[in-house]
Image 1 (cartoon, rainbow, N blue to C red):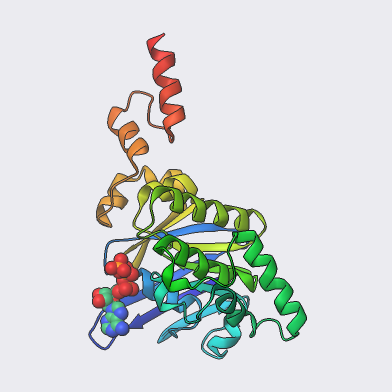
Image 2 (image 1 turned 90 degrees about the vertical axis):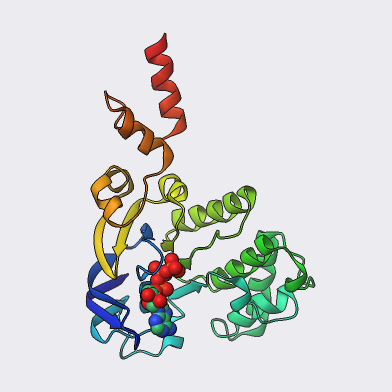
Length: 265
Ligand SMILES: Nc1ncnc2c1ncn2[C@@H]1O[C@H](COP(=O)(O)OP(=O)(O)OP(=O)(O)O)[C@@H](O)[C@H]1O
């Protein structure tokens, strides 16, 4: 769906991402992790043509982002900014969802029907004012606006930042549903518990270079790789590694509890 071929991008101040090679495959639920300033947002913007590579190529469903307008790529790649307030620009929830849809659906009746379906699916009242709603609700409005157009690929820059636990679970459950329905997802997060609980694949970025790419349980156990990227494993795999003695393959609280019960009985 998205292919990076030897991609480099350098900002005027000198910060850069270097020689990136990876492919996001159909149906992936991948997470991009790395320390602050590692280049995660830069990679996300290269995915949808907001930034164009200075060296190498990014292909979105076979289209070279250097030769296709960002507005065309937006039909395939939905992009959720870290801060919903950078995305929301309409006075009501209904208008906000309809705003993005006008570029995807030209027929007015079909657009209104899609908008109504999205409002219903999210449980939003269309006449509410987004800026009077909570941060979590605004994040869901921004996500609803992005997925209303049903893009094949979703790029999400820290979609759960600032959300409480319930709001976070609500957003992540929705993303899992979309992924199960075939949407390819690349999510940036600092939260290794989220990575452990939801990701299938983890890409690790360190100072602009991709230093790891593999299944979540493999990456989560690679302490040297995580340390190089200044990351800690999620708590349960971290504890399992620390305990050793047969605990190493444990990933979840349930598995840990079952193993402890088994050993204590
Ligand atoms: N518009 C810009 N102009 C110049 N330098 C930039 C710009 N945007 C980002 N940078 C620099 O590029 C580097 C990578 O930034 P980026 O935002 O991609 O990292 P990140 O991994 O997403 O960081 P964070 O986790 O803090 O959001 C940083 O050193 C940052 O200061």
